[in-house]
Amino acid sequence: MISIHSSNSNHPHRGPMDGTSGGKVPEKPSPVSSPSFCNSSFGAKPHGAAPTSVEAQRAMSITGRPYLSWSQVASYTLCPKAFEFKYVQRIEPDFIPVSLAFGIAFHDAVASVAMADLEGAPRPSVADLMPHIVESMQGATTPLRLGKGESLESLHALANRMLTAYLESPASKMSGSAICIEDCTRGTIDVALPPIEARVDSVYQSESGTLVVRDVKTTRTKWSAEKVAEAAPQLQLYALLVNAELESVGSVKHLEFLTVTKASKPVVALHQVPVLQTPQTLVAQLKSVWQGMTLGVYPARPGWPCKTCPYASKCPAAIRTAGVT
Image (tube, rainbow, N blue to C red; front, side, top):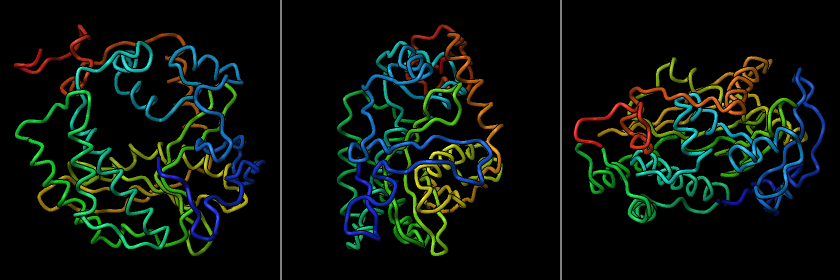
């Protein structure tokens, strides 16, 4: 994981991120306990440390992790059975969907660009970034499953086009002072839930002093307004945790997804997401998912996700593609 830095300091961390933050952000009607960044330099407990709350202990007994993450919530929502295979039974997947491997490799490349911007160093070129992407995708120990008509060579060419588009886009440069890049924060938003862990792509402070949380996504097609709304809860959850951590630095007033399309001519776009004024609906969604997990309710939801599910061979309900067993 890339270390967090501040572009306004000679030190690698700044302000409350050293673990001294506390209290409630006044505008939030529901208090959020101050989280600590998971990077060891922030003093956060390692993931293997003994959980301190009842719900953290329950999470540890279910998934082996003393927290709940958005990835877990999204996985359970899509298919509880796949969630069970991955997080509860911890079964080795049959393969890694190439879209996942590609997204991780591209994401790491973008983070390298952001880190160079933060440090005032020259931006890496596409030629600088491509070897990591090639190595990342070829070095997987679990087999990759390519899509129809895909090859590693075609994916490398796609990554080249996407990185070129990203580096040429004004949206790739954050207009403000970077606070953190590629780190995670953990905190409690409700006593009926385990601590929530958020893996944050970047947080920066705008020229007006407010904080902006950004998340980068690769996508097959341009995002519609409906897609942005569907994805919004992830960033809205992150904002609750970042607000508590960085209260003395500023408050989160803007949330944004940066998307890069996987196309012959990639499109880079920024999508704004509203900050929640009240978190009750989001908390209720998390509680509903958490209740299903704690009760051991893991029904299969056969459908289009079965096509790329790495656990389909173990699921009697999975819809199998012709020629795939």
